Length: 119
Length: 107
Image (tube, rainbow over all chains, first blue to last red; front, side, top):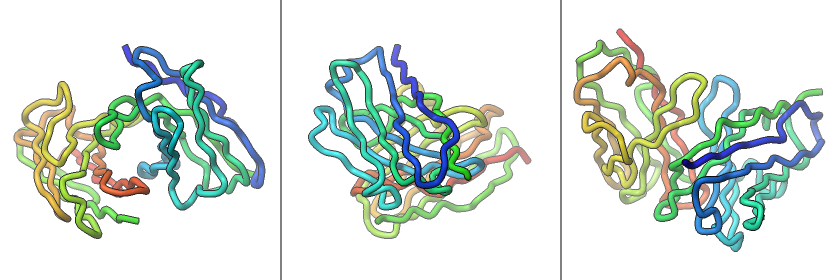
């Protein structure tokens, strides 16, 4: 079955950097786009970024554009989110999620990795 | 960016009753709208896409409708497992956006 497992979260300082990883299995990864979606504690869902199946296109929310970079390695079935110049407001549970391939919607989600940005 | 406004913020309903949630877009998004359900401590679950198409395994009591700027998610008869937070998401244009959510609680 489809599995999506995020890692790399923790506590980081404002202005710092980190890279989240997302390892997937159970589907042909190279044929599907992938999303990152975040959820601040007690708040709603906030779409962050998307990468096309071949890495050829990436899209970002305005709040992270220029600071975050999404990438993927199809040989490792892994998608990444490089997060630079962290802000306190980036504190959230970061979900990695599989695109359904026909629409830009999520049909499978990971359990998330928690990123806390605090001094 | 396209702003989605969900209403009400919280809806209190008794099991067995019908309920309707609303999602309004700041500009036309055709039928490019999805609905998700999220329970505490869990990731969201896809319920409906293309405004009215139920995802695999979603019970028939969930019904989505609408197009353009106004959308609804209707529950035919609420079951105990339906009490959760519901989000709409537009995929008509980048950046993708979610509504702020509606909490469906037991009355």
